[in-house]
Image (tube, rainbow, N blue to C red; front, side, top):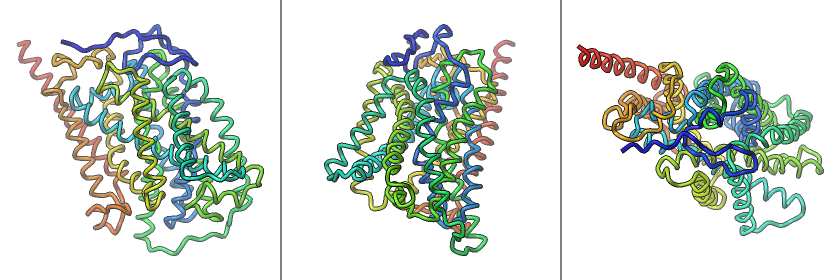
Length: 477
Protein backbone atom coordinates (compact mmCIF):
# COMPACT_ATOMS: atom_id res chain seq x y z
CA UNK A 1 0.00 0.00 0.00
CA UNK A 2 1.12 3.53 -0.65
CA UNK A 3 2.10 5.61 2.34
CA UNK A 4 1.50 8.89 0.57
CA UNK A 5 0.51 11.59 3.02
CA UNK A 6 -2.25 14.10 2.42
CA UNK A 7 -1.33 17.08 0.29
CA UNK A 8 -3.17 19.47 2.59
CA UNK A 9 -1.60 20.91 5.71
CA UNK A 10 -2.72 23.43 8.28
CA UNK A 11 -2.05 27.09 7.72
CA UNK A 12 1.50 28.16 8.42
CA UNK A 13 0.94 31.02 10.87
CA UNK A 14 3.47 32.96 12.92
CA UNK A 15 3.06 32.41 16.66
CA UNK A 16 1.44 29.00 16.18
CA UNK A 17 3.12 25.60 16.06
CA UNK A 18 3.49 24.53 12.44
CA UNK A 19 1.50 21.34 12.00
CA UNK A 20 2.91 20.33 8.62
CA UNK A 21 6.19 18.47 8.40
CA UNK A 22 7.29 16.41 5.44
CA UNK A 23 3.82 16.81 3.91
CA UNK A 24 3.24 18.35 0.50
CA UNK A 25 2.31 22.01 0.82
CA UNK A 26 -0.87 22.57 -1.21
CA UNK A 27 -0.95 25.55 -3.55
CA UNK A 28 -3.64 27.29 -1.51
CA UNK A 29 -1.31 27.17 1.49
CA UNK A 30 1.55 28.89 -0.36
CA UNK A 31 2.46 32.45 0.52
CA UNK A 32 5.23 35.02 0.53
CA UNK A 33 7.76 36.32 -1.99
CA UNK A 34 11.35 35.25 -2.76
CA UNK A 35 12.66 38.47 -1.16
CA UNK A 36 11.52 37.07 2.20
CA UNK A 37 14.27 34.43 1.92
CA UNK A 38 16.93 37.11 2.41
CA UNK A 39 15.86 37.79 5.98
CA UNK A 40 15.68 34.09 6.84
CA UNK A 41 19.19 33.37 5.58
CA UNK A 42 20.72 36.60 6.85
CA UNK A 43 19.45 35.91 10.38
CA UNK A 44 20.74 32.34 10.24
CA UNK A 45 24.19 33.51 9.17
CA UNK A 46 24.69 36.51 11.42
CA UNK A 47 26.41 34.06 13.72
CA UNK A 48 29.62 34.09 15.72
CA UNK A 49 30.74 30.83 14.16
CA UNK A 50 31.82 32.73 11.04
CA UNK A 51 33.96 35.08 13.12
CA UNK A 52 35.64 32.00 14.54
CA UNK A 53 36.17 30.62 11.02
CA UNK A 54 37.82 33.87 9.89
CA UNK A 55 40.09 33.92 12.92
CA UNK A 56 40.97 30.28 12.37
CA UNK A 57 42.32 31.10 8.90
CA UNK A 58 44.90 33.46 10.41
CA UNK A 59 45.65 31.10 13.29
CA UNK A 60 46.66 28.31 10.90
CA UNK A 61 49.17 30.62 9.21
CA UNK A 62 47.51 32.61 6.42
CA UNK A 63 48.02 36.32 5.90
CA UNK A 64 45.02 38.55 6.55
CA UNK A 65 44.61 39.46 2.86
CA UNK A 66 44.64 35.77 1.98
CA UNK A 67 42.00 35.05 4.60
CA UNK A 68 39.79 37.82 3.16
CA UNK A 69 40.00 36.38 -0.36
CA UNK A 70 39.22 32.88 0.93
CA UNK A 71 36.19 34.21 2.83
CA UNK A 72 34.79 35.46 -0.48
CA UNK A 73 35.67 32.42 -2.59
CA UNK A 74 34.47 29.85 -0.08
CA UNK A 75 31.12 31.57 0.29
CA UNK A 76 30.38 31.49 -3.45
CA UNK A 77 28.88 28.08 -2.67
CA UNK A 78 25.83 30.04 -1.53
CA UNK A 79 24.76 30.29 -5.15
CA UNK A 80 24.53 26.49 -5.24
CA UNK A 81 22.40 26.66 -2.08
CA UNK A 82 20.19 29.22 -3.82
CA UNK A 83 19.92 26.99 -6.88
CA UNK A 84 18.61 23.97 -4.97
CA UNK A 85 16.14 26.28 -3.21
CA UNK A 86 14.09 26.44 -6.40
CA UNK A 87 13.14 22.78 -5.92
CA UNK A 88 11.07 23.76 -2.86
CA UNK A 89 8.32 25.71 -4.66
CA UNK A 90 8.41 23.21 -7.55
CA UNK A 91 7.55 20.25 -5.30
CA UNK A 92 6.05 21.80 -2.18
CA UNK A 93 8.17 19.42 -0.10
CA UNK A 94 11.35 19.75 2.01
CA UNK A 95 14.78 18.75 0.71
CA UNK A 96 14.79 15.38 2.46
CA UNK A 97 11.75 14.30 0.39
CA UNK A 98 13.08 15.77 -2.86
CA UNK A 99 16.29 13.77 -2.45
CA UNK A 100 14.30 10.57 -2.99
CA UNK A 101 14.63 11.48 -6.66
CA UNK A 102 18.41 11.16 -6.26
CA UNK A 103 18.78 8.14 -4.00
CA UNK A 104 15.49 6.25 -4.18
CA UNK A 105 12.92 5.71 -1.45
CA UNK A 106 15.12 3.34 0.57
CA UNK A 107 18.47 4.80 -0.39
CA UNK A 108 17.35 8.23 0.74
CA UNK A 109 16.77 7.00 4.28
CA UNK A 110 20.50 6.37 4.53
CA UNK A 111 22.13 8.91 2.23
CA UNK A 112 19.61 11.74 2.39
CA UNK A 113 17.83 11.51 5.73
CA UNK A 114 20.49 9.63 7.69
CA UNK A 115 23.56 11.62 6.69
CA UNK A 116 21.54 14.83 6.62
CA UNK A 117 20.39 14.33 10.19
CA UNK A 118 23.96 13.67 11.37
CA UNK A 119 25.29 16.79 9.67
CA UNK A 120 22.46 18.96 10.97
CA UNK A 121 22.99 17.65 14.48
CA UNK A 122 26.72 18.45 14.21
CA UNK A 123 26.04 22.11 13.46
CA UNK A 124 23.36 22.37 16.14
CA UNK A 125 25.92 21.05 18.62
CA UNK A 126 28.54 23.58 17.53
CA UNK A 127 26.12 26.51 17.77
CA UNK A 128 24.81 25.42 21.16
CA UNK A 129 28.38 25.09 22.41
CA UNK A 130 29.46 28.56 21.29
CA UNK A 131 26.25 30.13 22.58
CA UNK A 132 26.79 28.46 25.95
CA UNK A 133 30.37 29.75 26.10
CA UNK A 134 29.15 33.26 25.26
CA UNK A 135 26.42 32.97 27.92
CA UNK A 136 28.99 32.05 30.55
CA UNK A 137 31.20 34.96 29.50
CA UNK A 138 28.18 37.31 29.62
CA UNK A 139 27.31 36.41 33.19
CA UNK A 140 30.94 36.73 34.27
CA UNK A 141 31.13 40.13 32.57
CA UNK A 142 28.12 41.15 34.65
CA UNK A 143 29.92 40.06 37.80
CA UNK A 144 28.23 36.67 38.27
CA UNK A 145 30.53 33.73 38.99
CA UNK A 146 29.35 30.75 36.90
CA UNK A 147 30.01 27.28 38.27
CA UNK A 148 30.20 24.12 36.11
CA UNK A 149 26.59 23.40 37.05
CA UNK A 150 25.69 26.93 35.98
CA UNK A 151 27.42 26.37 32.62
CA UNK A 152 25.34 23.25 32.12
CA UNK A 153 22.13 25.12 32.91
CA UNK A 154 23.06 27.91 30.50
CA UNK A 155 23.71 25.34 27.78
CA UNK A 156 20.28 23.80 28.35
CA UNK A 157 18.65 27.26 28.32
CA UNK A 158 20.28 28.19 24.99
CA UNK A 159 19.21 24.88 23.46
CA UNK A 160 15.66 25.35 24.74
CA UNK A 161 15.38 28.81 23.18
CA UNK A 162 16.67 27.52 19.84
CA UNK A 163 14.28 24.60 19.85
CA UNK A 164 11.33 26.81 20.74
CA UNK A 165 11.72 28.69 17.45
CA UNK A 166 12.16 25.40 15.59
CA UNK A 167 9.05 23.93 17.20
CA UNK A 168 6.90 26.91 16.18
CA UNK A 169 8.31 26.48 12.71
CA UNK A 170 8.54 28.21 9.36
CA UNK A 171 6.18 31.18 9.73
CA UNK A 172 7.53 32.21 13.13
CA UNK A 173 11.12 31.92 11.90
CA UNK A 174 10.24 33.96 8.81
CA UNK A 175 8.52 36.66 10.90
CA UNK A 176 11.35 37.08 13.43
CA UNK A 177 14.33 36.66 11.08
CA UNK A 178 14.47 40.22 9.68
CA UNK A 179 14.49 41.73 13.18
CA UNK A 180 17.17 39.31 14.38
CA UNK A 181 19.39 39.99 11.37
CA UNK A 182 19.09 43.78 11.79
CA UNK A 183 19.72 43.87 15.55
CA UNK A 184 22.49 41.27 15.66
CA UNK A 185 24.03 42.59 12.44
CA UNK A 186 24.17 46.12 13.89
CA UNK A 187 25.93 44.83 17.01
CA UNK A 188 28.52 42.95 14.95
CA UNK A 189 28.99 46.00 12.70
CA UNK A 190 29.77 48.12 15.74
CA UNK A 191 32.14 45.41 16.97
CA UNK A 192 33.81 45.57 13.57
CA UNK A 193 34.51 49.27 14.03
CA UNK A 194 36.28 48.55 17.33
CA UNK A 195 38.18 45.63 15.76
CA UNK A 196 39.38 47.79 12.87
CA UNK A 197 40.61 50.48 15.25
CA UNK A 198 42.55 47.93 17.31
CA UNK A 199 43.88 45.84 14.41
CA UNK A 200 47.60 45.31 13.93
CA UNK A 201 47.88 46.31 10.28
CA UNK A 202 51.54 45.34 10.26
CA UNK A 203 50.74 41.76 11.28
CA UNK A 204 52.65 39.10 9.33
CA UNK A 205 52.09 35.37 9.45
CA UNK A 206 55.17 33.10 9.57
CA UNK A 207 57.02 32.68 6.27
CA UNK A 208 55.88 29.57 4.40
CA UNK A 209 56.94 27.71 1.28
CA UNK A 210 54.73 27.66 -1.81
CA UNK A 211 53.56 24.12 -1.09
CA UNK A 212 52.70 24.88 2.54
CA UNK A 213 50.83 28.03 1.57
CA UNK A 214 48.87 26.24 -1.14
CA UNK A 215 47.90 23.58 1.41
CA UNK A 216 46.67 26.28 3.80
CA UNK A 217 44.61 27.92 1.05
CA UNK A 218 42.88 24.61 0.38
CA UNK A 219 42.36 24.09 4.11
CA UNK A 220 40.89 27.59 4.40
CA UNK A 221 38.54 27.07 1.47
CA UNK A 222 37.30 23.87 3.09
CA UNK A 223 36.67 25.61 6.42
CA UNK A 224 34.77 28.52 4.85
CA UNK A 225 32.87 26.33 2.38
CA UNK A 226 31.57 24.20 5.25
CA UNK A 227 29.10 26.98 6.05
CA UNK A 228 27.12 27.07 2.77
CA UNK A 229 27.68 23.36 2.09
CA UNK A 230 25.78 22.53 5.27
CA UNK A 231 22.66 24.28 3.93
CA UNK A 232 21.71 21.96 1.06
CA UNK A 233 18.39 21.75 2.96
CA UNK A 234 17.43 25.17 1.60
CA UNK A 235 14.20 23.88 -0.01
CA UNK A 236 12.87 23.47 3.54
CA UNK A 237 12.48 27.25 3.73
CA UNK A 238 11.36 27.98 0.17
CA UNK A 239 8.70 25.27 -0.18
CA UNK A 240 5.93 27.59 1.07
CA UNK A 241 6.48 29.99 -1.86
CA UNK A 242 3.96 29.83 -4.72
CA UNK A 243 4.90 27.56 -7.61
CA UNK A 244 5.02 30.56 -9.94
CA UNK A 245 7.74 32.31 -7.88
CA UNK A 246 10.71 33.60 -9.88
CA UNK A 247 13.55 31.08 -9.88
CA UNK A 248 16.13 33.80 -10.39
CA UNK A 249 14.81 35.76 -7.42
CA UNK A 250 14.88 32.66 -5.21
CA UNK A 251 18.52 31.97 -6.12
CA UNK A 252 19.67 35.58 -5.68
CA UNK A 253 17.89 36.35 -2.40
CA UNK A 254 18.99 33.05 -0.84
CA UNK A 255 22.60 33.52 -1.95
CA UNK A 256 22.83 37.15 -0.82
CA UNK A 257 21.28 36.30 2.55
CA UNK A 258 24.11 33.85 3.12
CA UNK A 259 27.03 35.60 1.43
CA UNK A 260 26.78 39.10 2.91
CA UNK A 261 26.90 38.22 6.64
CA UNK A 262 29.23 35.25 6.14
CA UNK A 263 31.88 37.25 4.29
CA UNK A 264 31.68 40.30 6.56
CA UNK A 265 31.86 38.25 9.77
CA UNK A 266 34.65 36.06 8.41
CA UNK A 267 36.62 39.20 7.57
CA UNK A 268 35.96 40.54 11.07
CA UNK A 269 37.38 37.36 12.61
CA UNK A 270 40.47 37.42 10.38
CA UNK A 271 41.26 41.05 11.23
CA UNK A 272 40.58 40.49 14.94
CA UNK A 273 43.14 37.66 14.93
CA UNK A 274 45.91 40.24 14.36
CA UNK A 275 45.40 41.73 17.82
CA UNK A 276 43.67 39.16 20.05
CA UNK A 277 43.90 35.44 20.77
CA UNK A 278 41.26 33.82 18.58
CA UNK A 279 41.77 30.52 20.39
CA UNK A 280 39.50 32.03 23.06
CA UNK A 281 37.63 34.65 21.00
CA UNK A 282 34.47 35.13 23.00
CA UNK A 283 36.46 36.41 26.00
CA UNK A 284 39.58 37.81 24.29
CA UNK A 285 37.53 40.39 22.38
CA UNK A 286 36.91 42.16 25.69
CA UNK A 287 40.40 43.61 25.34
CA UNK A 288 39.54 45.64 22.23
CA UNK A 289 35.95 46.79 22.83
CA UNK A 290 34.62 49.24 25.45
CA UNK A 291 33.51 47.69 28.73
CA UNK A 292 29.89 48.77 28.15
CA UNK A 293 29.77 47.10 24.73
CA UNK A 294 31.26 43.74 25.72
CA UNK A 295 28.02 42.38 27.28
CA UNK A 296 26.08 43.67 24.27
CA UNK A 297 28.44 41.83 21.94
CA UNK A 298 28.07 38.59 23.90
CA UNK A 299 24.27 38.93 23.84
CA UNK A 300 24.45 39.32 20.04
CA UNK A 301 26.57 36.16 19.82
CA UNK A 302 23.95 34.26 21.79
CA UNK A 303 20.99 35.53 19.76
CA UNK A 304 22.79 34.88 16.46
CA UNK A 305 23.60 31.31 17.48
CA UNK A 306 19.98 30.73 18.51
CA UNK A 307 18.75 32.02 15.14
CA UNK A 308 21.13 29.73 13.26
CA UNK A 309 20.14 26.81 15.42
CA UNK A 310 16.46 27.45 14.80
CA UNK A 311 16.87 26.70 11.08
CA UNK A 312 19.30 23.82 11.57
CA UNK A 313 17.17 22.06 14.18
CA UNK A 314 14.08 22.64 12.02
CA UNK A 315 15.69 20.77 9.11
CA UNK A 316 17.02 18.07 11.43
CA UNK A 317 13.48 17.48 12.69
CA UNK A 318 12.27 16.98 9.11
CA UNK A 319 15.07 14.49 8.46
CA UNK A 320 14.21 12.46 11.54
CA UNK A 321 10.52 12.56 10.66
CA UNK A 322 11.16 10.54 7.50
CA UNK A 323 12.02 7.57 9.72
CA UNK A 324 8.85 8.02 11.77
CA UNK A 325 6.31 9.86 9.58
CA UNK A 326 3.52 9.45 12.14
CA UNK A 327 5.52 11.37 14.75
CA UNK A 328 4.86 15.11 14.80
CA UNK A 329 7.61 17.43 13.60
CA UNK A 330 7.81 19.25 16.92
CA UNK A 331 8.47 15.93 18.67
CA UNK A 332 11.35 15.06 16.33
CA UNK A 333 12.81 18.53 16.86
CA UNK A 334 12.71 17.97 20.62
CA UNK A 335 14.47 14.61 20.27
CA UNK A 336 17.19 16.22 18.15
CA UNK A 337 17.63 18.91 20.80
CA UNK A 338 18.13 16.38 23.59
CA UNK A 339 20.82 14.55 21.61
CA UNK A 340 22.60 17.81 20.80
CA UNK A 341 22.68 18.92 24.44
CA UNK A 342 24.39 15.69 25.44
CA UNK A 343 26.98 16.06 22.68
CA UNK A 344 27.55 19.74 23.53
CA UNK A 345 28.27 18.71 27.13
CA UNK A 346 31.13 16.60 25.77
CA UNK A 347 32.57 19.50 23.77
CA UNK A 348 32.36 21.89 26.71
CA UNK A 349 33.56 19.68 29.52
CA UNK A 350 35.46 16.73 28.03
CA UNK A 351 37.03 17.73 24.68
CA UNK A 352 40.74 18.54 24.99
CA UNK A 353 40.72 21.48 22.58
CA UNK A 354 37.48 23.02 21.32
CA UNK A 355 38.89 24.65 18.17
CA UNK A 356 40.90 21.54 17.29
CA UNK A 357 37.78 19.40 17.65
CA UNK A 358 35.81 21.94 15.60
CA UNK A 359 38.46 21.86 12.88
CA UNK A 360 38.45 18.13 12.25
CA UNK A 361 34.68 17.79 12.57
CA UNK A 362 34.22 20.44 9.87
CA UNK A 363 36.88 18.94 7.62
CA UNK A 364 35.43 15.44 7.72
CA UNK A 365 31.82 16.63 7.30
CA UNK A 366 32.74 18.59 4.15
CA UNK A 367 33.77 15.31 2.52
CA UNK A 368 30.10 14.32 2.71
CA UNK A 369 28.34 17.69 2.38
CA UNK A 370 30.15 18.72 -0.80
CA UNK A 371 29.10 15.65 -2.84
CA UNK A 372 25.56 15.78 -1.41
CA UNK A 373 25.01 19.38 -2.50
CA UNK A 374 26.67 18.73 -5.87
CA UNK A 375 24.36 15.78 -6.60
CA UNK A 376 21.36 17.88 -5.61
CA UNK A 377 22.43 20.71 -7.93
CA UNK A 378 22.98 18.26 -10.79
CA UNK A 379 19.58 16.63 -10.29
CA UNK A 380 17.76 19.97 -10.43
CA UNK A 381 19.54 20.69 -13.73
CA UNK A 382 18.98 17.24 -15.23
CA UNK A 383 15.29 17.13 -14.30
CA UNK A 384 14.82 20.80 -15.21
CA UNK A 385 13.42 21.31 -11.72
CA UNK A 386 10.40 19.14 -12.50
CA UNK A 387 9.40 17.56 -9.20
CA UNK A 388 5.97 16.19 -8.35
CA UNK A 389 5.40 16.47 -4.60
CA UNK A 390 2.78 13.72 -4.51
CA UNK A 391 5.02 11.26 -6.37
CA UNK A 392 7.97 12.18 -4.15
CA UNK A 393 5.84 11.44 -1.09
CA UNK A 394 4.98 7.90 -2.18
CA UNK A 395 6.98 5.16 -0.43
CA UNK A 396 5.41 1.98 -1.87
CA UNK A 397 7.22 -0.28 -4.34
CA UNK A 398 5.17 1.14 -7.23
CA UNK A 399 6.49 4.61 -6.62
CA UNK A 400 8.20 6.11 -9.71
CA UNK A 401 11.15 6.73 -7.39
CA UNK A 402 11.45 3.12 -6.26
CA UNK A 403 14.10 2.51 -8.95
CA UNK A 404 15.93 -0.75 -8.14
CA UNK A 405 14.55 -2.22 -4.93
CA UNK A 406 14.20 1.28 -3.52
CA UNK A 407 17.71 2.41 -4.47
CA UNK A 408 18.88 4.74 -7.23
CA UNK A 409 22.18 3.63 -8.77
CA UNK A 410 23.31 7.09 -10.01
CA UNK A 411 22.89 8.80 -6.65
CA UNK A 412 24.21 5.93 -4.55
CA UNK A 413 27.29 5.36 -6.69
CA UNK A 414 28.06 9.07 -7.07
CA UNK A 415 27.92 9.76 -3.34
CA UNK A 416 29.91 6.66 -2.34
CA UNK A 417 32.65 7.26 -4.91
CA UNK A 418 32.94 11.01 -4.35
CA UNK A 419 32.86 10.77 -0.55
CA UNK A 420 35.44 7.99 -0.51
CA UNK A 421 37.85 9.98 -2.65
CA UNK A 422 37.20 13.13 -0.60
CA UNK A 423 37.95 11.30 2.65
CA UNK A 424 41.26 10.16 1.16
CA UNK A 425 42.06 13.83 0.57
CA UNK A 426 41.09 15.14 4.03
CA UNK A 427 43.77 16.72 6.21
CA UNK A 428 42.79 17.29 9.86
CA UNK A 429 44.52 17.10 13.21
CA UNK A 430 42.67 13.83 13.76
CA UNK A 431 43.21 12.16 10.41
CA UNK A 432 45.27 12.77 7.27
CA UNK A 433 44.15 10.94 4.14
CA UNK A 434 46.78 9.21 2.01
CA UNK A 435 46.18 11.49 -0.98
CA UNK A 436 46.54 14.58 1.22
CA UNK A 437 49.73 13.14 2.67
CA UNK A 438 51.13 12.46 -0.81
CA UNK A 439 50.35 16.06 -1.80
CA UNK A 440 52.23 17.50 1.16
CA UNK A 441 49.13 18.08 3.25
CA UNK A 442 47.02 19.71 0.53
CA UNK A 443 43.32 19.08 1.22
CA UNK A 444 41.42 18.91 -2.07
CA UNK A 445 38.29 17.34 -0.56
CA UNK A 446 36.07 20.43 -0.89
CA UNK A 447 36.93 20.75 -4.60
CA UNK A 448 37.39 17.19 -5.84
CA UNK A 449 34.43 15.71 -3.95
CA UNK A 450 31.73 17.86 -5.62
CA UNK A 451 33.33 17.61 -9.08
CA UNK A 452 33.53 13.81 -8.93
CA UNK A 453 29.97 13.64 -7.60
CA UNK A 454 28.56 15.76 -10.44
CA UNK A 455 30.47 13.91 -13.17
CA UNK A 456 29.53 10.47 -11.83
CA UNK A 457 25.89 11.32 -11.19
CA UNK A 458 25.30 13.02 -14.55
CA UNK A 459 26.91 10.14 -16.46
CA UNK A 460 25.00 7.38 -14.67
CA UNK A 461 21.73 9.35 -14.65
CA UNK A 462 21.81 9.78 -18.43
CA UNK A 463 22.56 6.07 -18.90
CA UNK A 464 19.64 5.16 -16.65
CA UNK A 465 17.38 7.47 -18.62
CA UNK A 466 18.50 5.87 -21.89
CA UNK A 467 17.93 2.38 -20.48
CA UNK A 468 14.48 3.32 -19.21
CA UNK A 469 13.56 4.90 -22.54
CA UNK A 470 14.72 1.79 -24.40
CA UNK A 471 12.66 -0.45 -22.16
CA UNK A 472 9.58 1.70 -22.70
CA UNK A 473 10.12 1.60 -26.47
CA UNK A 474 10.48 -2.18 -26.35
CA UNK A 475 7.25 -2.55 -24.37
CA UNK A 476 5.40 -0.23 -26.72
CA UNK A 477 6.67 -2.16 -29.72
